Amino acid sequence: MLGATLSEQEQRGLAEKLTTLLSNYRHISDSYIIEFFSESLWDTLPVSWQKALGDLTPPLIADLLLDKEIKDRRYPSVWPLSLLALRTAAHALSFPRKAPGGHPKDAGAQMWDEFQSNQSQSSLLGHIFRKHVKPKKQHEIRRLGKLVKELCDEANCNSVVDVGSGQGHLTRFLSFGLGLHVAGIEADPALVSMATKFDKQLLLTLAKESQKSEKSPGLCSEPGPTPRHVVGWVDPKASWEFFIKQLDITENNGPTTWRYNKGQELEVEQNTCRTNAEELQATHSADTHFSDSVSQINTLVFPSGVKPKNICSCASESPVNNSPFIGSEVTIPNVGCGVQQSNNFVLTGLHACGDLSSTLLRHFANCPHVQVITSVACCYMKISTQENPNPPGVIQPQASQATIQHSEFGYPMSDWVRGLPGHQLSYKAREGACHAIEDYLHRLREESHLLRTHCYRAVLETIIREARPQLRRPGVQTVKKAHALSFSEYARMALPRVGLPVDLPFNPDCVDAMLAQQGRVVAYFSLVLLLAPVVETLVLLDRMIFLQERGFQSKLIPLFDAVLSPRNLVLVAVKPTATES
Image (cartoon, rainbow, N blue to C red; front, top):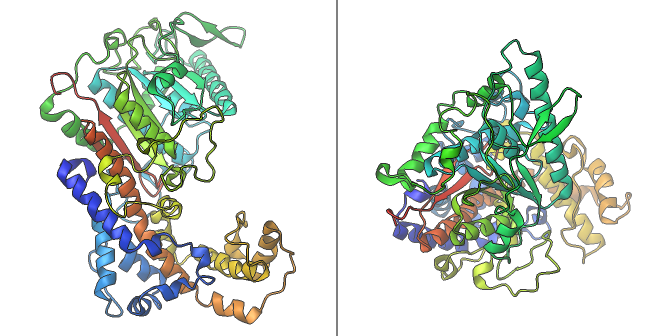
């Protein structure tokens, strides 16, 4: 089941089922595992559940409770129907997370095909795009970049705006690797500075390699212009018109590219861009599974073979539809901020945090210039809600004094979900939706020592509350390699971080009794994790229904391998042409 294969009625029906399920088990999804002992969480479960789960080994918890791919389950005891029903409903109602070509199970110890030869270097991404980029990000920018390029081709639009562009890794790949006109907007000036620096380094590397190459210097590619990096915070309360002004896409600054000169320096020229074609072609390595995602999108947003026409009038100016890396040296057309003159563009956000993803969807729905959106969300706990309009960790702009209206919350976005009883999602439930279930499956199957860290923290919470009853769930910075420490060693390192003495006395017998219940802690946390994909599904389904209510179809694609990139669902929407609408 993919979200966008459902009709409008089916989407609404699914939302009803999700809110009903989560309402019934809110006491689990809203619980904090560090309060396992202090709040007696185990005793909140039905006795029949305690008997079924209490003595399970971690590998059995993985197979019997969390892994939806397991077909032949062997139970050591009879499970209550209510527990079986919860597991079945949670698996059935959650959006699928397996990417085309992804691993059928958790693959924590396995190696992805693209990292077989080098665990840190994707073989499917040219080396110029791997510098400064971790393997997870390499995997993401390659797959999302190719998806964006396919959508640009389908929509006949060659301009992209990358929101929350960070150090510009995706922006560089889209521009230099895929020949698109790109503007990136990022709130952190330090990251924008790094993005500009890395752009220069990339072009310097290409120029040096071109000088060393035995190939003719006339062999060059046709990348897009150097991306424009804009410092700007995308205010959820601001209009799409203000967002456009931030990008300044109507300004014509002329073609700007970086070029290597004989003086071993980079200079700005109003001219052409010369790169190493052979290197850039490496980014077009065969990816037999990627085409599956693109074909899924085409069947939905471009039904019956109909494709948008004349969405972007500038498409004919940059012939990148075949291979953007082979051809003669060309002059890049006039651009402003990396976006072409038509002002129409594709909007993308790779792991846009909190309300940023919902804000981009509103800009897609309201702004006539945005023709396509690809949205990869993260940090659901930072989404604003009516119950918590200012969630922890979210900086509010001092200049914005506007009162938040219902439609401006990050969740719910749709009128339908807002009207459902029990639709509310707590901060804790949304935070839980960010956990990596595939990684935890691997820990369970390996019976990893990492499993003891939750138990350690839960025991520590009881010690903290005994010393200071008013101090609840204080933040304890990660204790390095806590799983390799004894509890006493762990406590000595953790207690000073919450303002308690390192030698604070505690009852060793009581501590040992709690540590002996690690299996129960793991089982309970697995129940919480079972509901995590359900919460994520409701958040993303709400966004799809929001688009549906405004006349836009959308598709949810598990684009990344969830083992490598847990937030792997990409929401794609394309505006219909005048003929389709």
